[in-house]
Image (cartoon, rainbow, N blue to C red; front, side, top):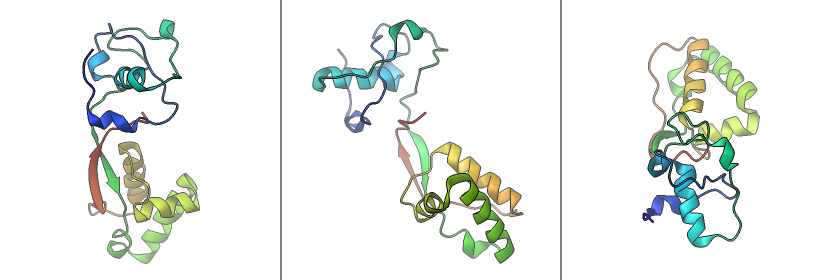
Amino acid sequence: MKKTTKIYKDIPAGYPLCLHADCPMADSCLRQLAYRRHEELGTFLKLINPSKCSKQADCPHYVSNQPVRFAKGFTNFQKRMYPDQYDKFMTLLICHFGRNQYFKRRRGDIVLPPEEQEAIQVALEKAGVTQPMEFDEYIEAINWIP
């Protein structure tokens, strides 16, 4: 059995696991790598139905173990927009995330996966912002929620 690294110590509770160690994608699939870690430590497992995994590169349950670039916070955006632009931008995102969730993301309390970063970029465009905007901070991490 291959060793798992420390990045797999923070597996979310109830994360769906795959038990197909013989799959050609197993060494880069978070579901299989998490299974290996749970096999060592866990008592109860939440498994994906083994008959629903294809053991091919196009498996619908495959999740890459490659770290992705998350963003944290966008407090600096307001300073670089006109008031009307910021009002429209904020309204669009509050409608998308909800009021409290918007402010948590703005402050950086919730990290932004690539999909949410894209939603924010779209809101910037809809608000009429043409200059590029950078988030407050970027971090590399495993994306447990595909």
